[in-house]
Image 1 (cartoon, helix red, strand yellow):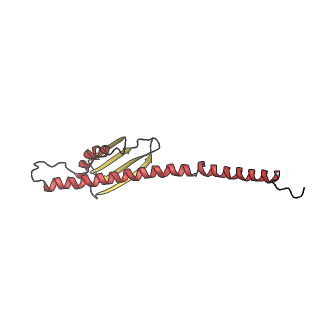
Image 2 (cartoon, rainbow, N blue to C red; image 1 turned 135 degrees about the vertical axis):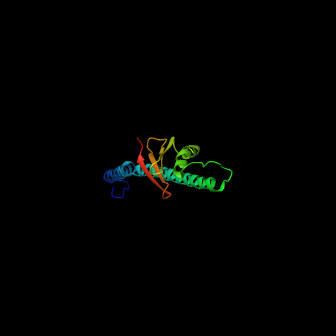
Image 3 (cartoon, one colour; image 1 turned 60 degrees about the vertical axis):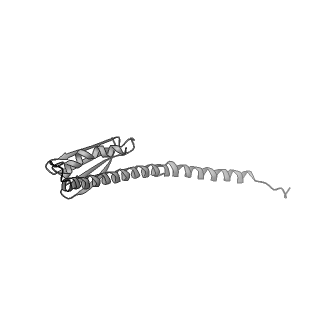
Length: 150
């Protein structure tokens, strides 16, 4: 009987225990607080915010250049298109952003005293982040802030 070959019951139990430990670790790595699935979701949200920031930045830059082009090169215009570039951005930007469907709602407000335009993009999905951008007319700078959606 010494020449019999096969797996002992102890070796089989140890193998099953090792496999269960590896499966448990794998599940925790996927679904835990810092798991792969959560990090992938957060990366997707970050990418959407970056995309929205880029879209706002491009739209504002296009509007600012269009404002100055229309104001200073269009000799046929008898009235200025707007008193300030910030006001022009605030009036025109929401329609520009809605064309590209980057948000379910885009709004812009204009502050008479500072001549700044504040743009707000509300995300389509509940996991997204609300993006607020402020265009400073005096400096030509665009600041963006992302906050979790309500």
